[in-house]
Image (cartoon, rainbow, N blue to C red; front, top):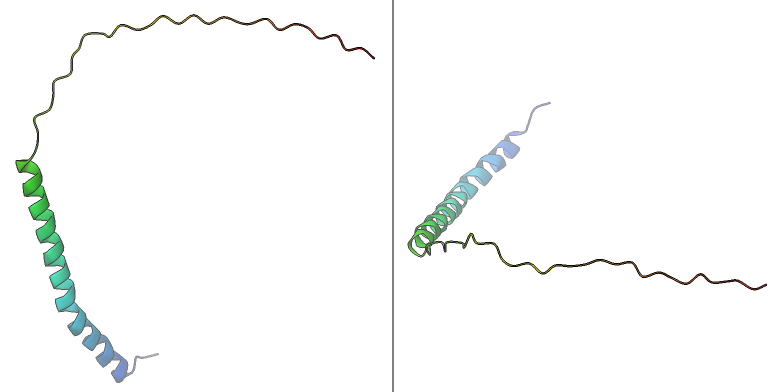
Amino acid sequence: MTKSTSRKKRNKLTVILLAPILALVFIAGWSLYWIGQSWHQNTKQPQKLTNNTQTKQDEIELIMIPQEEQILAN
């Protein structure tokens, strides 16, 4: 089974028409990525140092509340 010549021409035409569009999309995306990376590096804030002292924690006491037994009357 072979492809017809008109189909080969259509595929070549599609590639010829889409190649410049894909190249422009790639260049635009790469440029935006590069600009974003350089902008992010310039605006990077110095990291705040964390305080290593332990915070005071409240003591919690757990208790059980006894339930009254129910007597079922028939």
